[in-house]
Length: 236
Length: 140
Image 1 (spheres, each protein chain N blue to C red):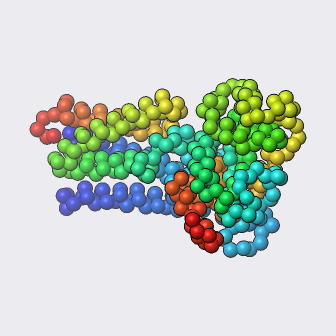
Image 2 (image 1 turned 90 degrees about the horizontal axis):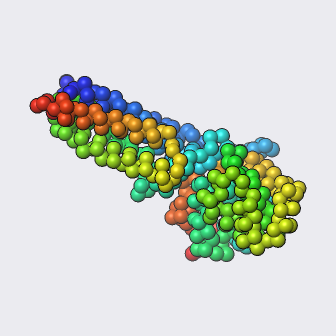
Image 3 (image 1 turned 90 degrees about the vertical axis):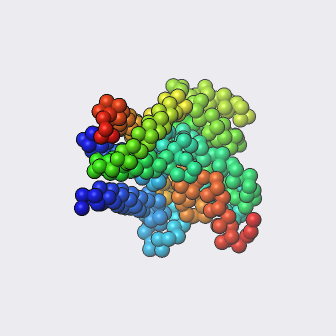
């Protein structure tokens, strides 16, 4: 019996470890992914498997989009410019944009998180540049140079430099930064995010359903998009 | 010597719990993604947190479980298990050093549960070194 006891102990621990891992990874995602909140406030009983993003409150209009309005794949990203995983997702999304071209339409929604000191400033900077038609240029600069600004004390001069690089009239950009439109747009995007139950960033919706975070890597996202394209009737 | 194996087994259980917690965080995107409530960790969302498609934390959990198994067997008199502990824990220690280096100089942010794991691994190494070279005798 003594010779078997250690094996029994080991098996018990293995069972406990696997069991708790399974249990804890099963229950948590249910509250994370907004399968239900997407249908929420007006509470109609629609089937839980197909939450429709149209049920969310509209965000800032006109939205910042890349790609044709009638593209079969509509991706909507709620992003925070200071968020490291968002920064890492940026090149992946760019790659998808290159690979899928006109079949993909990307929309960006501002979702600056309170835990990030400069997130709101960055969102404002992007929106101010957007007023002059240079949103995506500013968006790219902010994400690509995340490491350069996120730990700085005063980001305003840095963002002004990016704005100039993006090609805007810097004086006008500075005025717009403090204006109502920028604040309103960020507020509206945030309200849309809240209505969809967005808990963090990056959160990506594809044709109305949230793409699980673990699928936001290039190879997995490509597969997800391809499957959706097949389902929609086109082929690559 | 047996007491050292028991200590190693208990310590590795702590390491296993720590690594499991990190694995769960990783898999559920809890602290990998940035959330409104709990912020996010640069360390856990860095590319270094994934090895060949697996969360590094999961590999760590497997390593701790192996240490636990070997230490338990060794405590019950299985000598071969005891000898395997040294190379395994040494390897884990060097990996820990590399991860601390990454946190300190590349990512430039620390993750407390990761540091806890490094402390556990270091302590395990001390235990094994003491057992092997200090208490050496024939019992090892």
